[in-house]
Image (tube, rainbow, N blue to C red; front, side, top):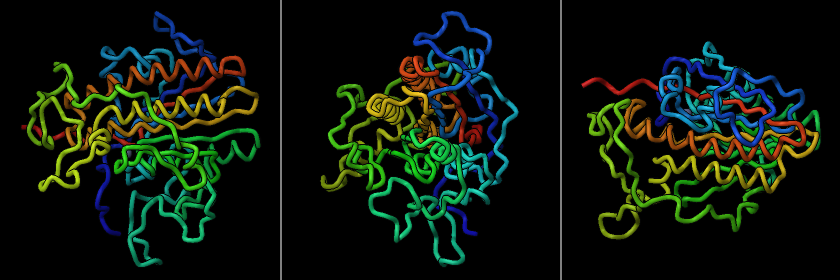
Length: 360
Ligand SMILES: [Zn+2]
């Protein structure tokens, strides 16, 4: 097997799994509460995946958090001993395992990319079948996803159940949504917009996130909980502000680094993902009838930031803090939407952790 060209490092298994099992009111309690009682029959399940979140990181950062992550820490049921059991703790197998509960040899996604000895070439975890039906959102479209997941079980047990996923990466959206989702959407760094399989792509047409939210540069307060901003071994630029504008090419032609790519390497990738998740929540009326729906929200910014700057950097810390706030707003919306019909269950996990940068 060849070493993949690109991917997350193989690290110690992730041990973060939180579930907020409660009929949540729209507003969180002012005082942290004990774990709330389970919802008897939720009308909405929201699975949140933070891409690259080392075990124990949230507990360490807890005093700095006040949004959705904090709410899960305070009121959720925490399973610190959970761990991925597969060897290659990468994005693709991690996401596929989280929704299926299967090992890679059973769900079929062993790495992000690998050498297929029958095809005699390298294949992608989300490679499309050549004979995939043109209008399918996911059914039999991706040849390497073979196992069944929670998404498939929900669709099979109740026809009215809806399944959606939205993610910063294509593999994170595709591999969590099962074989026949109603929609799986992901961010395209080239265009700076979301896309999806051909059968559902058109449903994004005309959608634009709120303007004026994403700045032209990323700045953050320097916090003593993280390493110095100019820490060696970070990929440049090492210090704030980080431009989020397109970088001009050497000859003034094609951008050397598009704005879409730069946003993907910033916390605002997750803001965009949560904006689209909110739209799906509203447009598809998720959680508003007796048939339970599934919405997977895969937040990829921490992975992009962590790869370049490390998990103890100012940038990574700022990303988690911002995402915590945006996630809190989204969770309130989801809880309010689902409350009359049964309530919502939130589950949070990482697909993998990460090793720290070397010491100086
Ligand atoms: Zn990942």
